[in-house]
Image (cartoon, rainbow, N blue to C red; front, side):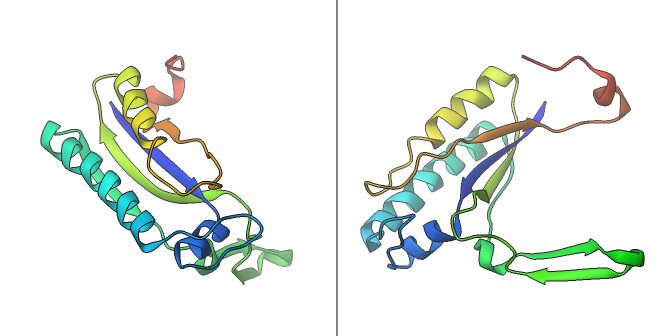
Length: 143
């Protein structure tokens, strides 16, 4: 079954990785950033080798988000940078093809142990099964 695995972050986290401390996130050193990329790269390489990796991407910082919604009388409303610096949003994702929910949970458990400087908030990794048609809409949730 395919799963979407989402790591989360805040604008403050991106600022910290650029060397700017905020009340919500510490400064990351260049070595901290390199360690994080090496750790995630090793997970990606393993998943590619096992054939479980379908796709993986980091997402641009929340300050670059644009929301497009329908406003009054159906008019389009466009808002740039709509989120607070501390609001938790997706920071990156994997699409994985794993044999079981247990296997994808093992992978998420590795992801939460990614190296980071002291003071970085522990944010959950989100696992969502990817639906494969109308039968999935009607299926009993996997637990």
